[in-house]
Amino acid sequence: MRKGKKVHPIYAAAVKLRPELVKWRRHLHMYPEPSMQEHETAAYVVEQLREIGIDEIQTGVGETGVVAMVRGGKKRGKTVGLRADMDALEMTEETGAEYASRKPGLMHACGHDGHTAGLLGAGAILHGMRAKLPGNVKLVFQPGEEGPGGALKMINDGVLENPKIASIAALHVIHDAQTDNITLTIIGESSHAAKPHLGVDSISVAAQALIAVQQFVARHTDPIDRRLVTFGIIEGGTRSNILAAQVRLVGTIRTLEPASREAILNFLKKDLGKLVGAMGAKLKVEHEVGYPSLKNDDGVMDAMQSAATEVLGAECVNPVGIPGLGGEDFAYFVQAGVPAGMARLGIRDEAKGFTSAVHKVGFDFDDAVVLPAASATLAGTAIKMLGG
Image (cartoon, rainbow, N blue to C red):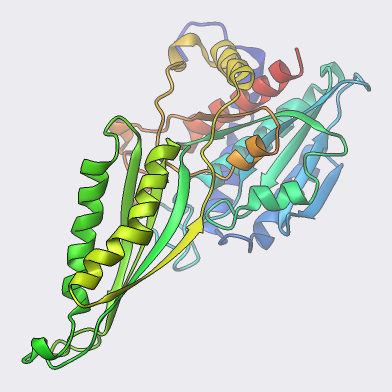
C-alpha cells in the first residue's frame, strides 16, 4: 500500500496478524505432505483454528479436508465459502531458506502453504468481527489439489451443504484450463544395436511421434486458441547396445477451447497410431480426463476486485484477467453450480530475489508481505459476498 494512505481496518487487522501468518506458513512449509496424505497439516490447521477461537470444525471431509464455520450475528443470513488447498508436491526443495522443507522429496512448490495460512488469517479476521457479519463464512481447507481432485471429494462429502454455500472464492499465486493426462506407449521390437534392421527402434519412433504431436498442435489447431501438449516423462530402454522394446511418454494436455481439445485427442487416439505403424511399431494411448476449465463467476470476481481495491488500494489491483493454462480443481465448485471465483495473487519481487515460478525447486515468496494481503482480501471478499 502507498505510504501516507489511510489503512483499511481489515488490512490493519491482517498486518497485526503478520507474525502469526508467517509462523503458520513456515511451519506448513517445513512439514509438507502429498495429496490426500495431509494428516499432520489438517491437525495443525485445526489446532490454529481453535487457538483463534473457532470451534465449529469438521475434519475428515473429503478424506483429509477441514471445514470451519464463522457464524455471523445475523442468524438468518446466507453462507459463503472461502477455500485454500493444503497439499505439497513430490519435489526436493533448493531454496536454501531457513524454513525449507524438512521432508526429503516433498516441497510446497505451488504456494499451498501460503493459501492455507492466508485462509487461517482471514478466519481470524472474520471471527474477530463475527457479531457484525450479515451471514456465515465457511472456511474450506481442501486436500489433494495436485491431481486427485480433492475439491470433488469434499463436494461429494457435502461441503457445499448444511448450510448451503451461496458462493465461494479463492486466491492462488497463479492458475484455469481443462487438463487431460495422456500416456503414449510406443511398442517396438528389441534387437542388437549393430543389427537395427532386425528390430523396431521404439526410441527413434518415439522421437518422430513427439515431433508429430507438436507439429499437429502448431499447424492443425486454431492458433488463437489457448492450448498445449507437454510430455514431462519419457522412459525406455535397458542397455546402450540394445534397441528399446518400448518407450513410454507421459504428458499433459491443457486447453481452454473445446474444439482444440477434441482435435488434439482425436489426433493422439487415431492418426498418430498410423504414423507409428508406418515405422513398424504399435501405439497404445491411455487418456485420463483431468480438471475442467475454470470459468469465474462475474459476481464473485466483482466482489473480489471490490474488496481488494478497498482493503489494499486500487494501485494494488489489476482488473484485467489474462487466461492461463494452469489446471485447478477449484473448477469443480463451478461444475457443482456454485458461483465461484479465483483471483491471482502477485508474489514476484525481483529486488528480494523472489522470481521463481511455481512447480520449481527454487519457488518461494515474501510471506511477510504477501500473506497479510491475502488474508485481508479473502476476508473482505467474504463480506462483499454476504452483501456487506
